[in-house]
Image (cartoon, rainbow, N blue to C red; front, side, top):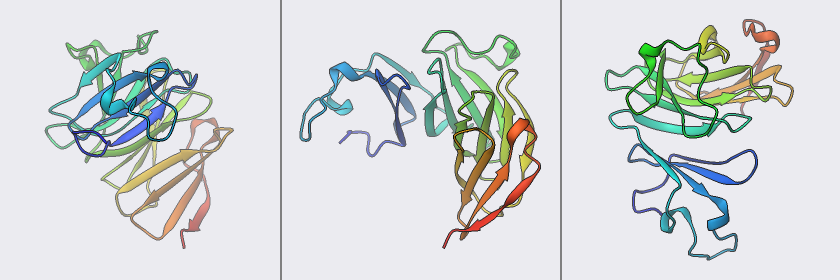
Length: 204
């Protein structure tokens, strides 16, 4: 296991060639899978391997980090020092993030920071078609973003507690969201509207 404690999240690149690990010390590391062991008990784990790229996101708090569907860049769900929920876009993999984003959102380290919630962003997912991003926050809102301009275009407001997980259907038309409540919300978001809901399912 990592000396930094349990990772916040892990995810393979869509082509299977690399692995991103978000650590609880607010760092994000990308590892070459060819240098990681695939057998149980192997010592070639991320904790004993050298990453090919790293980002230190302090003073932001990192909740999770994911590749975009095409694997061209990383998106991290974070909380800024002032408590706002932010999406950090990491430019490790080419091509760079969309050029339509305002240069004022860019940091010296090459990361873009986009404010999306009034509390920490706990989770995020890019739709399989790559056109939209869903974020879930401590403000009990699910934000729906247009990835072309990285603008939050609408929100889903039916849940009452922290949003812990969001997931798109394979065709990008439905979005499932869960919180600390005993239900799962499923909304029809095809076409990017996000305001129409097919209903909520009891989580048991």
